[in-house]
Length: 355
Image (cartoon, rainbow, N blue to C red; front, side, top):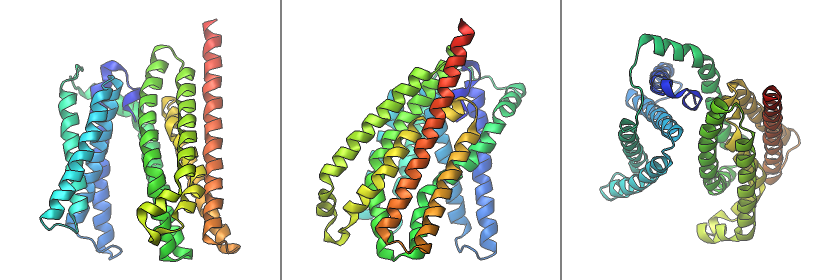
């Protein structure tokens, strides 16, 4: 997230610093996992810990590379890299399944797709016309400028990932494994297309908003355009799911009866999340990563509160999901209002200075 905020002459040095942080986090994660395993809290071995560290490192490399390419307006490469990863992943998983690697084939295929994407991105980066001269002064300047952002961004990202996966754990504590399965399949069906749209909008918005703030000092137009585009797409998604909810059971089979109702319950949460994710990097454009951290803390707190209410008042499963969906949706919309106020005030102040 440091890269779109960087000046053109410092892009490469900031990218190098981002990879230094990436290596630090990846190695630190391996050390933590290995340390935890020595106390028998988890039973995985060093090979698995190294694998997790490698996946985290690959994720950091690909995300940073995509951001740098977007900053240089190489949108086709970004899209092509994700397409390549999807095709290679599917092909590898099928091939590994055919040769008998059924238990680990899905994970191995996913990693092979990730590696293919990383290789394409590295090749594309080598073709960019950047100032690749690295000096100790440039590195120290980048570290000094962006260290505060990284210190907030890392825990924010971890809490965000936790909030996505925490629901399955919470459901398992109060409901049966059938409810866990229904929620998991319903969430994946509803969230996947929304996540793809939100990620694409967010990446382009972040690059454009950062460039506009550097060049003209204002990015209200980019914010409004992305916000309304996300709202329009959310309305389309709600309409599609509302009209075709019965198709879910037909596709998955009678075993998953009830998943269509859960998808509809989750729509307020997921659509609000789509809109929020699309413009949440406004916080990073302003250099205020603590705003993101605060929002992620609020979201996870609402989830815990909803679970507590469900236990105290003995909600049935669907009512619990509804309370959680409405609560998290409200939190996302409040964050959007907060961001809009900040951008509008910045626009007004900037216009006042120009008079």
